[in-house]
Image (cartoon, rainbow, N blue to C red; front, top):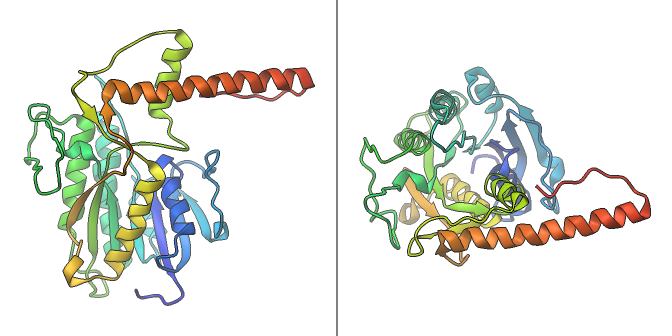
Length: 307
């Protein structure tokens, strides 16, 4: 670790779902001292409900900027010790915006790598995805980093998954690249599974539409299973990754490696997983209705929404 006063860490996509969990974990962890945490995002930073840190909130500085702007990314990396590149364009469906996905996920990652080299950033942790190992022809069961391979050209991957794979390869190949000051850049990629927690909006919002419409549905074969994890647990992995890259150990060197992330959340079938979220949303909706009724009775007017 080069700075005895504490490290300065930049989190791209820091205002988003996982980004805020990472920022909070960096504030509350006691693995290494932190001098400053910079959030870099195209949107303003506003803490998700229930996610306010218990300490060190004064160490957070938010920078509004686009990962697609090389100059802005380079400026944000000035005097930074480690970058957690978490910014991403997540898009699924039949007609995703291919141009935006490539611009953010691939070109944006290239901007982050170049900025690290230009500004002598010693550590780069990349948020990849377990989707990079998605092979519909050969389902992964109890898979590990060594048992799963992804070919350079995989027609099975969707546009989003392919962009994350291409960016991951770029980051891992940047490991041990020389910085301007002669020190070598150290990188790794983390592949989170599906996540739940404060600030999650993609799954819960879509489920909310179905629940409000009274629509019953079933997703996937009963035998197929999927893993989800709490975003806070996933975020703590970034603390450990940064610490390992800044304090390299020959026996546990993670430079140039990719890791799947999960926790001990029970693994259900896809249908059971969705059902768990649906039950929680129904309970939240009932609580929201009760709160609204109490507000109306007390004569208080407040705009509220469960989704």
